[in-house]
Length: 223
Image (cartoon, rainbow, N blue to C red):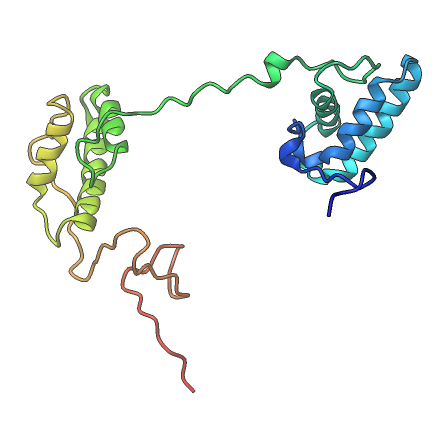
């Protein structure tokens, strides 16, 4: 059976022009196209304010943005293909500005020399190396060594000699940081345990001063 001449033709989104601002839909695009055909500028501007109100109701999440009113007018110009002559309350946006790509974020591609210590250790060593010799620098080296020992025990094994940490400090700093002779680290408690991030960390009410209870074990409540 042949289709009649009066049959309705169906249109699909894949057959029509791609929307520049899909969140407003194709009906807003038709409003903007009709808006551009209004010959009187004053009337065209009046209708532009009405279209912006419709856009605001269709895209309420725009209120979460700073200067959302200007954003809506910018979107109106984008939908119109920047070809819209109205008295806007905001400056007309330029395509080269709207379509410009953000500057790429610089990434540190330098490989980490000791993954179990992390990349920040290298930055801290740079800072310590620039410090003049004296008590302050010695205190900084000692604090860093204690932290590095903790990181070492988290990822490697249960014990580590202080000399191993001292050697790592001098190695990672390429000899620019020298550990003072006779430097000693605080003793580790016999019942201390070091867990990898996200593993077996307790947050029980018995913690004091907001510190994690490393030996926390969950207990079932008494019936």
